[in-house]
Length: 347
Image (cartoon, rainbow, N blue to C red; front, side):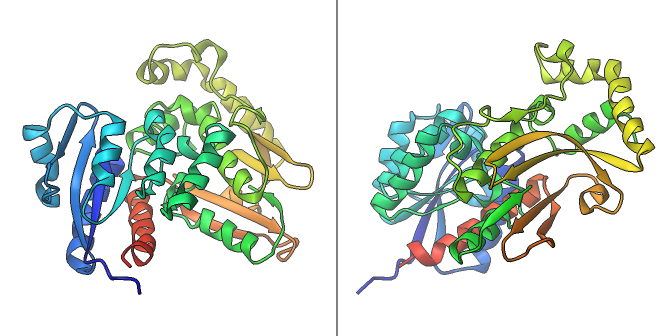
């Protein structure tokens, strides 16, 4: 007969914008959900890590301060895996980074019984072999893996797609200011990737489409294996930093204004979108024009919209819309994934 576990150990890697928000939410969950007890046993950032050999608890409320004052050089990933796998109870790794090396090690964590919650898109949009290794690793050890926030922040996009597929539906298709001012403002608000070129070159959308395509059954090899329009001007693609890019971007405002003006003459809006067409197996990212009556034309700020065209829904797609960026929103999605996992691992 299964035995209930009183404690679940949490390891958090990454304490930036999302990670900081997650720690605050974890502290709330620690107090509001007393069973099982959530014990922070490891916290790490670039250059520092804090943990105890005997797995004694790291106080969540003071973790960041102690990490800065008492943290040591972070151990290697193999050492972290061994440490977490030897914990006295079940362990959940919360990866709030976008680190490729950590993403590539997911199969190793999962095979050792360590469950993972993460918004890290690189884990699920890397090579198709890594995708297969991640899910086979989880299956082999009965580990649990949730990555709702790898597409659409806190929006229920992945869970919706999974529900459609598992119940037998068939996906047919899914998908004011000067430009430079808008991009800089989005960066300041935390709506873009750390380097906004990762949004404008289409690679961020491409990673999300890769994840959704694979979940829908298309074995997409990588985010660069389909048509991808790059909005970063050719002259700025090789600049050294994201800040230099933002400083020079106003030089190219007229290029974007021309696209907007051409659409307005047709009574339409321009949007940078990604789409998946299942019958033709076509995936693409680029600028498209939409009528003013189209739901995507009404998007504001950091909002995301996903339209699922399926056999059941026919001409009226299932639409998921809402805030698609921001530390609190993404952290909420990670916290939600953690809550989904607890009933599975706490027994």
